Image (cartoon, rainbow, N blue to C red; front, side, top):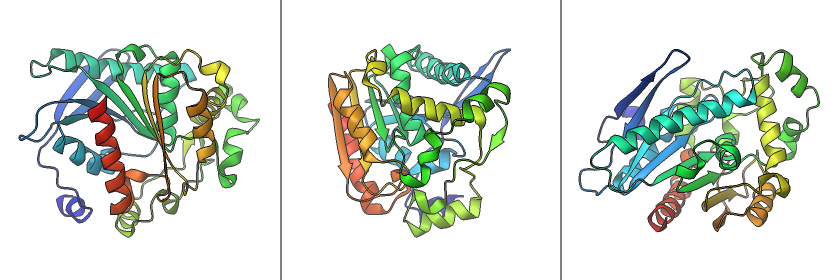
Length: 296
């Protein structure tokens, strides 16, 4: 694993601190990745991952954040839900775990919590700011290539008429209706090889999860439905080369979102997952992220 990570330009210097919560209804183990010893603590970034992902796909981001004074909080989600309410309950449980840990740490002088997500995770955190339980504790949102409007190949994902029925009667039924290929995610040969060697599966999701994807796109593409958006600082980044989601939907959201401080950056390069893109794309992303975090 160390050799694989170093070949991808990742040099994590520390192991994460583990944070557990065990209750009758659920249990989670989260990772808190520390800052470099040379840095002063500036805040914490909570990563909201996508179906099929694990923490290794965020190691390069974790590395950059730690070098600039930002902890990373990562918790593997179950992604097994009976209803859309379960989805946001899980997000709230993870946020609760993160917030309780921040508040209990003596070294934390600034309780800044930033949420970051891309693709489905990017749209989920935007929607959480409309109706999420802990939205008042979020300092800023960073949403990258959010799935708000689909490219032609994926357009059926947000218009399938049978999905609500399946989500109601067979919420946990598996579907391969998310036709994500590795080549949609990155043009970097190293990362393509890594994804193939680990046999990541990004296409199989539950019927209820697919329904949630459709629901979010409808909510965040109707300005009347996100009037209650409650986070003041929002950074949107979208690549014009994203083969899955189009920048058009992100532009619409940026235009009508009531956030006081909202910024949209459009990239000329980069496929769907900018965290595992080529070095030039990732370096630009890193610079933009750190600039935003330092300003907010």
